[in-house]
Image (cartoon, rainbow, N blue to C red):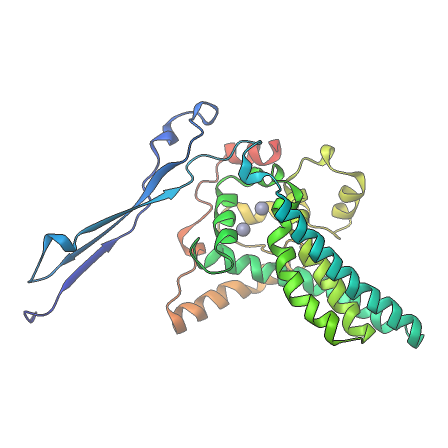
Length: 301
Ligand SMILES: [Zn+2]
Ligand SMILES: [Zn+2]
């Protein structure tokens, strides 16, 4: 039996389908429209109309055009990429100089190979995290989370995004994490690992963009490396955009098979939900917009 003080609390937060869904894609208006409406209604014995509130948030309802400013690189983007590359190069130089000084090449080279292999795993874990948790208001990574959600709605737009625009956020993270390591350590093995790992992470969004590109328009070397399984291929990555979320790794994609088959991320999601009540977006089918038309658009890019 309800006590007088017990409140019935209702909250709904459903995205409303844009009316432009009924208009052919090439005839839709290109403007941004405020579209997500979150309603929170509190119904208590002491109900007061002022407690009702409606929040309207701006959401992208149309894909950006190829010349959209949000896809262009800015000076700041280029500076961060330059800083990231410089930091990685400094770490790589320390590995080479240390290797020459100690006449020991094998260990730094093996450490570099380990960095390449584990960078693919690291890219998958990071990609999984921003695809499934947080939103645009999340500190530090909010814009990446928003961009990742836009990417699932319109996968081909990544091929229109300029290089520094696509990679600057990772370059900034690399700069802040690798620079202290460069300053603190001289071990060639440490730098063999760090420089290769950081290099792969810095360029993983570019590998991702190439995996969305049309083969005939990609550099031959990139296609050759994709065919050899050394860079993420479209054949592998399309699994990420079809059906339920999986195959998150975007450097070489070498970890995707083992992580998908072992249901590693599903186990992690279940553990986080049971321990912390955090519900991943993958349970809400973020690829629900996928249709054969989307598939063509994916290859069309
Ligand atoms: Zn994704
Ligand atoms: Zn993708």
